Length: 632
Image (cartoon, rainbow, N blue to C red):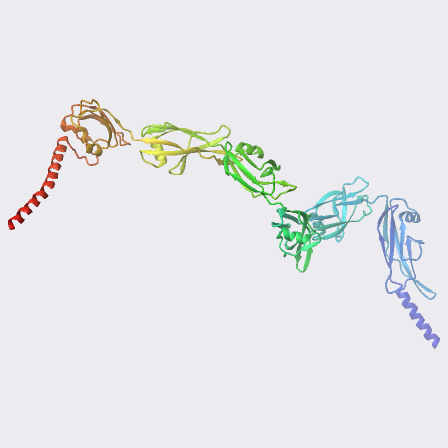
């Protein structure tokens, strides 16, 4: 009974071992495609629940006698020799394993076959340059193969699909990331192959590191003194969201907050860098991106140097600030009195070359333009510095405006009457292309567009100037010129005056009695003289500022008188046969006639009244004295 029981136990035991050995292994080959000189690794993966004593590999029905290891490496030459095949060849390989207990051995079923392709293709050589880039940088991939193929296949770690592309190509970091569907910073491994009837072996593996973009550090100004300040600006890419920036001197972090713009004094920099004057301090910066709870720090920027010196900046003065090409400007780069230098260096906007010249100098606008190789009109910004072992800080910036040449204004004639005309000539320089001229009225402070040479009537001048005659009209002119698609105004010319007077043309006429001073004033007769010294009644009238009425013409027997319609002047001709009663001139505002006889009567009356006023008090006084005497 005990023997039967032992037999049953052993039967179940061996049945369990046999059941374990009935699970087929899994065969893997790496790589599956090789050339004649390459090797392939065969791995027979057995169940973890069994204790395997050996593994066997087979090609067709022929066993590969390479020991009992479950991992074996064979060359393509060995495989071709065992299978008795020639290139190109496809070799199918299987494997099995053995479980041994005491003297009993159990062999598993064969694995599924795996194919090893042996061809005469050589693997390509992959080169990547550079190995580290940012999203905005570019990388060149070159899958160099020995055969005339232009298309290759790139395998990127983490991506199951090979990317078909040109064997030689250049990609930006952003384009490379779009291949991988990943975000920077990341390091990806890249291989490649090509097809030539068969798939070639894989190339060597090359890593590519894509970092977040580098920042750029800007220091302003780069040259300071110990008491000056410098502004550090860590310029980050606009495509990223930055949570903070950090600045470094050597390996020491500047603990001045998280702002990407910071200001430090020369004293602070010297203290942090532990330097003394003069000193050069290199500064770098980086930035941090935060996505949810993850932080990523950028690479450091390229270093920027801050020079801290014991020199003080000069002071630049320019007088005047606005000139024309023919006018002069005085430029003075005033250096500290403790620095005996005679030569300074001028920096002009738009010119890359610093101009060495005396610190105090006078230049014309043309000479100044020759420095800059520009033409007027132009606004230039100028700074200066000096050298004293080291370069001094740059001075204050001063703008200089160089205008086009000033025009010359001529008016001919300068004195006119209301019916005359004047020729206005705004003479522009021949060196400029003039598009339009303007006449500027000083009193009105407004301009009117005219031809550069134009004849205007007095009426037009008065209308434009918004004045009334008689008038003294002060005018200037300027012109417009076109340059670089824009209109520019020239300076004003020197002021010219146009005198517009009343028109008064009078002929000579005679009177039989002199004209009184009252009539002269009433009729605004401003000048007269005798024709003949022996003839007291013969007068010549020179000017009058009021017209003579029709009544005066009839009363004074003026046979012809004409007044222009638009001016209060008068023309007198053909006067004859005056009598003593015809010498009256009447004020046209009142039309009140006054004869010589009336004047004499009025004078007599005035004298009589004056005498009465003088005599009457005497009479009254005398009467009072008589009355007082009678009472006594």
